[in-house]
Image 1 (spheres, rainbow, N blue to C red):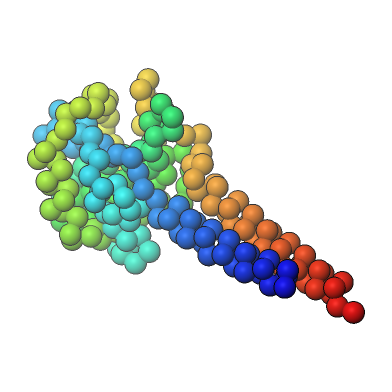
Image 2 (cartoon, rainbow, N blue to C red; image 1 turned 180 degrees about the vertical axis):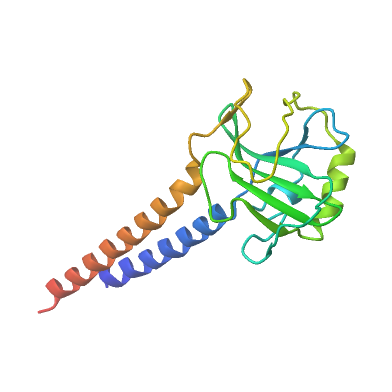
Length: 201
């Protein structure tokens, strides 16, 4: 009976951890900043439609496209998460609402398979994005504007208020969580098997 209880407990743990890892992997930022045409300073936005999903601006899995000849005027978007009192840049992208393109510059101090590529923007994001710009909180401290060219490997210098993460801790933690989950489950089933064998006459 005891091994069955362990197996049930292990399965419950498995489903719980899978759910947690799924939520973790989806991302979710605390806020974004937008700089671009006719903006004197960065606009800080916390609208969940723009911050909740890593793929809010474009589905990097499915919507890769060729570099457009003329994407038009674009906005640079930095996505942040908060660690204690630090506001840390996670990644950077350029969004072109009029032509519907996204250039993903990449993770600020790291890399991913999506870096340096062009994508077709989610058509539904334009309305949300423009609404967020029109509201413009104005609560953020001015962010130094620098000329930013999509595809450039040069990153924005660290400023006194915002610090860049030495590496994205959340992306690094995901494989660790999966490895711990697999190891724990393997140990659990081995223990249950041995227990059952030793209890059999």
